[in-house]
Length: 123
Length: 322
Image 1 (tube, each protein chain N blue to C red):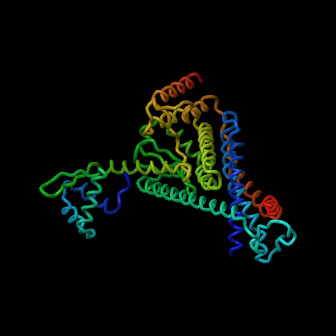
Image 2 (image 1 turned 180 degrees about the vertical axis):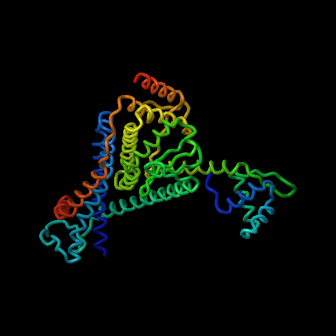
Image 3 (image 1 turned 90 degrees about the horizontal axis):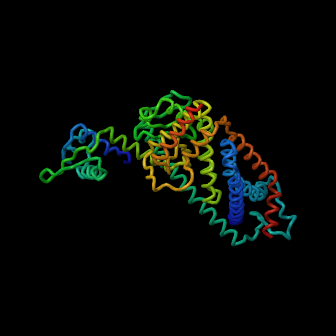
């Protein structure tokens, strides 16, 4: 998952502290920091929902939004995305990862681990 | 101004041709180096040399072709156009008639170079932003020889990064997934990369590769990558023992995401198999990287040839174009 933008992070902070809010309620909670247009907040909530960071349920005519992941899980997802981006630049930014596991499977790794233990024991 | 553009266009075409030839030749020579008999550190040095030669030769030729006109214009030294009126000229001063074919090749080579450079710069920027964002999420410690940044996320990341500020970036949760001995081996390996200046060398190779034939430059980079990994393994094995490094390779490979199922595997050794087998086959002490000194020497020699032999190279190219 891409890192959250400034408004996305503010919206998530509101919903992590107080889940199940409508667009209007989130907009009101944000207003004391900086006034945002209702439609801007609505678009942001919709985008976070399509990113699967938020879940929503119908409440009359409005949607109620709640976080689909904890702050820690969100941070992990962002970190994983950034790591992938970083490693895609392998060789260009001067990134040297510890191991390239491409082409390995558990059976092969098991055999290698056994071989290492045999060599260790026979030392 | 037109004279200068024509000279630059023709010189670029010639420099591009020389660089392409040098690129193919250096890869051909590098591919003949025995991967199993040559020490990884020496193979990495040779790959770095092979990767830098196309760029150095292109720049040397470009300087040699442009320098006489430049010196003449600035009044430092008269060019030699007057002494070979029978001859074709590469000159911005005396109204030489450019070859349309060369100009076309020069323009195409410059355009291709700019596109590749732009893409590389963008990739650089994207990766730099990802690294910065990752570091903001992480926690920096100064426990090792180089700064370490512990980042959240899946427990398998461990990279040596930084052209200007070398550091090791690793998953904070790696500690809970690896035995202390394996973690020590991972850190020793990454620090060995930084001692060897590998991130700098890889970044340099990426830029130098813009002067070579595209596919060939990538092969040289891959050769450097493989050799530098094995060299860092050898240096880490000096510190923590070859079995610890081999076990760490297997342990971290298990944590890597997206490994294919067994039926998707190809034939031949994978990188992990090869590195583990090298470590178990009898550990030889890791060599130091000679790359920084070697590169300095090659750059100095190239500059000397380009500037000192400018007139000779210039005249030789003119004769070949005749």
